[in-house]
Length: 282
Image 1 (cartoon, rainbow, N blue to C red):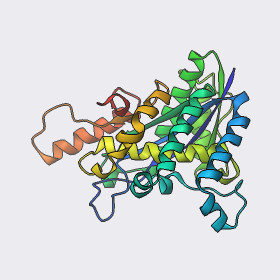
Image 2 (image 1 turned 135 degrees about the vertical axis):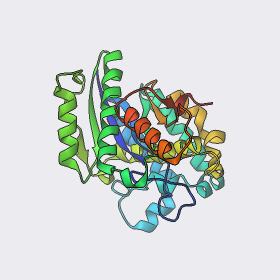
Image 3 (image 1 turned 60 degrees about the vertical axis):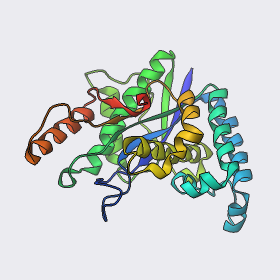
Image 4 (image 1 turned 90 degrees about the vertical axis):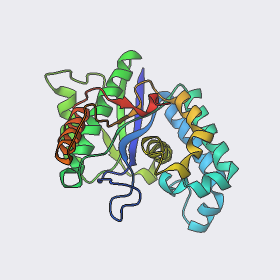
């Protein structure tokens, strides 16, 4: 069996302080997510998603003047509080989408971390490559458990060379090579691929879930993620999916100690060591 993983980014790659901060307020989480499909279901699923998109967003597509095959709606723009609360069709369509992925033998997949590295120590490229390594490790495990191979298709990225280098190192490294991944990730223009547009929609939703569960006090206006979608998402995800929550595990008495502990916790998570996972949080 061959599976195809379609991945995009969720959350935000830059540093985060709080939702009220004037500069660093985008999202407390960052990760890669999307879906895993059996290769022989990818074409029919793409058609199904295209038809769902055309029905759900018919007015916007008509107003754009573009052919619906290359018109895309970003998940971050789709899954806003206003849209979800106001439009029952969006809620129903999302649940049909999650059911469809399960129905064709696929899974929703995501992996990421909560960010709490100090702004001056933030490194977007390193964070991206760290999460990519996590994703490849988990996808390799998924394929191994299904006695299958897997290929990865991602939205194009400006750091293409670094991504391909890291992916090749993971695939052919001396320690735990990712033998089930058959090629480094293919990078494509998402507006030309219905499956990649679907992955972006899923990431729009996953990003909201991650922000709400990581910082409920700041993102409580997005409690709708639990009301409408969380159970369905949890039914559709792989057991390897989740967002690692940062946590200080020893007592501290000064701000200097806090900075040291936060840095060490972040480094441990980026190295794949255990941490609390949002998917397991109550």
